[in-house]
Length: 363
Image (cartoon, rainbow, N blue to C red; front, side, top):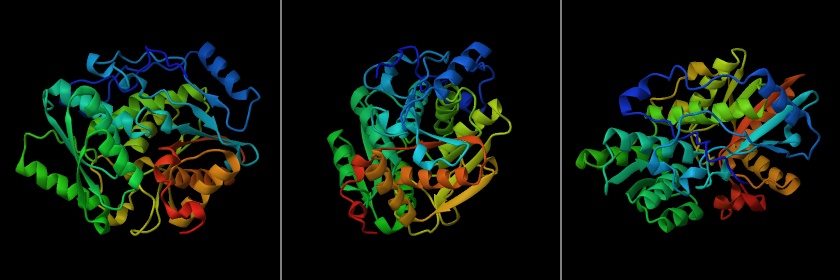
């Protein structure tokens, strides 16, 4: 699984002000030869989960601080075919984001936000990173903090899985546990309170940070375009901070104006899909633009759990619950089509959820 050292989709950053407008010429569409080669890869016979990786990207080079292990491994994740979700005439693929060094899609946004913080001077040597997290972004912050020498303080709902808590502590993060009944919103309120008490803390505020979605605009979206050979017709992604959908959807829609975008969220305020938000009952992220999606699908906790178990037991894909929700939604989208290439995002793997009872068939 060697990655081209030239390819680092999280690396492009400028001081904070430049995050407000998309770069004009960071990406040039693939030429016909490149598209033909990528299409040949996609059409080649393979297994049910055949994986594709972009060879490289012409994105700008990395900041020196972020070109060190394990950060040089962020991004460039495989695009795997998931035939179990397909319908006749429809191909379904998923980005295997657990292949990032911190084990989730959140490595992308965390690396970008920290890079912007360093560039702007907001994050100084020896400083402390503070944010609210349901787990994955916190793990990414903690990994990066350990690698670069920053302290990390995280506000986390007390009902996150034991595996996530252990990973955070293994990286040396300081945890502030918040009321589980308040979910991620309670963690957000506590982070805001702590930052007000100590403004010198570097508070990326992932829910309102432009660098969050730009990580996917410059990285995830470009990767999907290359790996699908420009054939992607539908994008399906869950909503947490909304950064993944916003950045990936914007980039792909620029490349294919006919792209159909589907957002996925829990069907109830009280749900068990860690990492996703029920937007109508939650603090809505400032980076979220509901007009980007053509369609909104609601997924129950039970359906997400069932799909997560099914992917592991029947298809050898051990993924997290938000991945199960995305898969359930992608299957529904595929079932409505007669032709198309559906791409979804699997945010993380299942190993950080193994203490959950649903693996035994319990709710």
